[in-house]
Length: 76
Image (cartoon, rainbow, N blue to C red; front, side):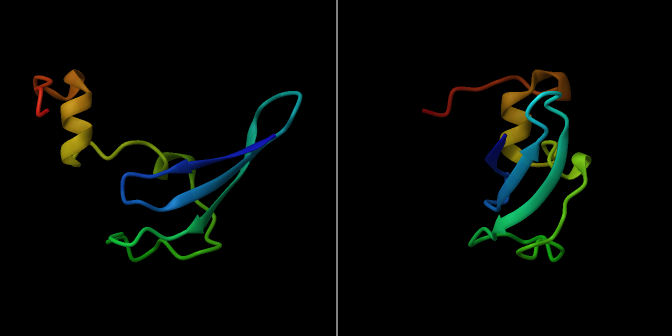
């Protein structure tokens, strides 16, 4: 079982999990985002689980998660 995730920086990560237990065992950067500012994000790099979590300092993360202390505002 595998799928891809797009990180906030625009990088695409290939994620592979065991088909029966669904435990993720592989997380690898497949493509680097055009505007990615993270030096460590090289194609083929293995990522730790916590590197997939939303960055609370990222503006979009603050707008989507009221637990970070900001109100969700309508920008549209």
